[in-house]
Length: 94
Image (cartoon, rainbow, N blue to C red; front, top):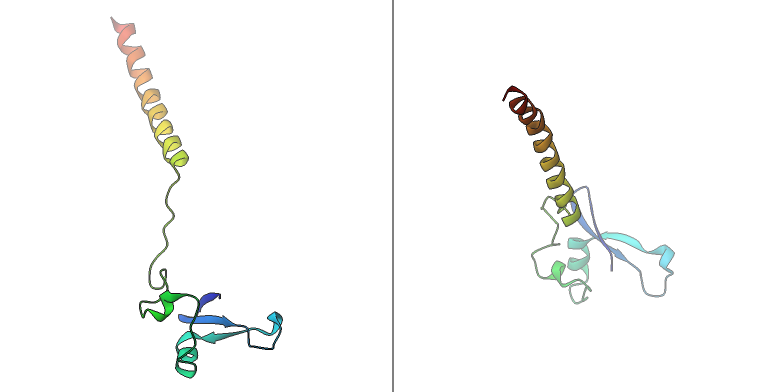
């Protein structure tokens, strides 16, 4: 079973019995549950009353360990580059 949010309204893709997959229709989840209360949707999150796990939440991508490591390496290289000229001038004056 597939779900989507269209204009803020949760919808479920319904393949009607005896019809082809190409004729499946998107139905508002609330209206579908009101019309067919005994029908068991495959996704228990919708029936649990709590909604889809991403409904009303902002998605933020977690950074991969590789990206975190590379960012740290770049910061260290930049710090060394900034310290490099300062160390060179202190050795020249001594």
